Image 1 (tube, each protein chain N blue to C red):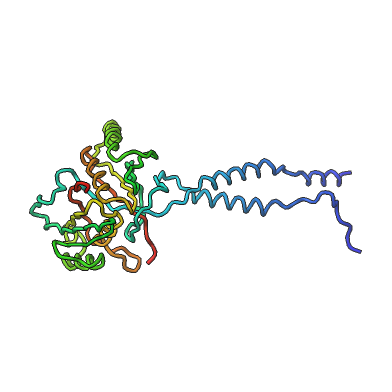
Image 2: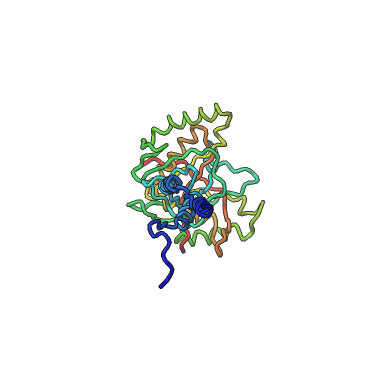
Length: 161
Length: 146
């Protein structure tokens, strides 16, 4: 008699159904709310009104590097001019910018003080501007970003043709 | 002859592995879940850049303006015309000033499509400047492949 009772006490089943229900609810909630976010980054630009014109250069400031990006007939890149000289492509632009500001980095270096001003045609596809900004802002060496020029601005927009 | 089978009627399925696995899955999805309200839109194909590494901390209360390749702006999920953004920006500005913040400290994130016209991106920047915003972030998709 006593043996039978203890066997019964061992056999108390916990009803798992509600727990599994809840757990599955939670799982489907998290699965449905999963949003795959592509990694994105920003190029910071500080451009107050009135100072976007290139003719204001204070004493501390090195004259800006002027990069002109012209558009082809379909909005593709027509040509690059850096300070009036033709540049073959974005790699060449980067080499020339490095040639101008030198290899020195860090606070108060020439690269830190130099500003690049982009003058873009209205119809130029934006992807070219991002490529140009990438070329002047830095390089990737062994997975590390080596910064070049941080100060970037644009000339005032041109009227649509 | 073998032992007599003990109560064949009560064959219990062992739930333990299933519950283990389900909890693992829940934890995985919980960690992967992104709480940041990153405004991303399928209508925008961002240009790629190797330097556009994801930032450590999110920008504090940014204003996101997305420019489609057709030249219209997506603001707060709504498709509006490029010239209409000034009214919305005015509202953003008054919200900021009411909260005691200077509009010049607020960042305007510009998510423009790679095929959009540069002139239109500049027009957006100009309209924002006229409203007193001066910090801009041009967003690009991180390109890890070489």
